[in-house]
Image (tube, rainbow, N blue to C red; front, side, top):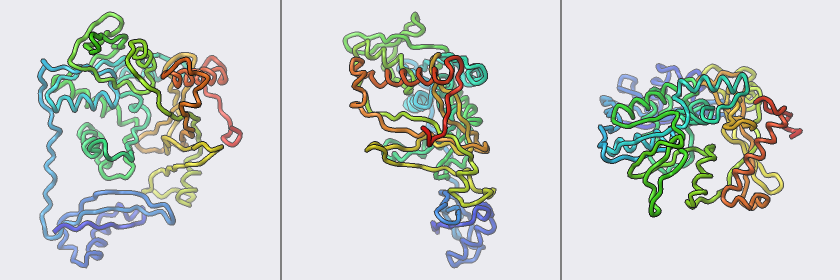
Length: 402
């Protein structure tokens, strides 16, 4: 017999296995000897009153536990005659490649940036010296923006695919198994490079191709069909289809689509600032503790408000994290948040953003569907000037003053 139960425990008790077994037996009115296995299904924090950790458990009673047969994802050597070209080696590009391999189709990935290890040199250049490499930075390169900006794995969307499958693939490639049970799973930007590298090796081992330093500069189109890509202005590559997995920062791809008369449309987006505070401040507000207990995670928050009839909300909150320079072009400033797996920085940060609707872009109407990109460039260039016009040091002020 298998019973599912829920326990609400003090943080330290949630990691005390003998105590958990005793409490399970008591709740089910059985002897501890009848419990053959306890499997954690879900772990979350309830901080509404005194902080508690909620465990959802599967209790095996007088029944042997048979682990789920861990068949690694159904990869097989691909058929080289069927080829899909993928632009971008970020999360979308790499997971598209893994799906294609499961179908026996050969993915060929073109990434404008460098491999995950080589990117570190360019990150140091922008971090310490304010030098922006427009092809290799916090947004561009193997693993995309996600590699060096946190690895939070949380979504409210449940109808777009098998989320558990994605988490299992990440575990197969080096992420901790904790992400399978935590309500807000997180990998950390110190672990993600290893995961990304392992995914690359899987793609290559089963017959995929990955080309770094390969900037897609044109599409090969005939009779309204896309036949292939031009890379680095000169190399032609042909395939059965093309997947654009370029992320939101590859402005040149959007301009290329527009120039090629490929229909694109603008959609609302959000823009704002990144706010930084002491992590201890957020912990004290959320947990009502002067010093956070050992087994409580660095606390996060979500804020939603209205200002002048417009929604203002927090986005990409990074507990125990850092703010990093994320510009993709010289003469602009963009910032993002990231955190390591332990989330042990003494600072927390979050985006505080407001929605930008199409009707807000009247001053840029001449750019059509690209109006939002022009507003984005204008703001990022103004911020660069406000920061001194010579470095990647972002201007800063008190949030209340802003």
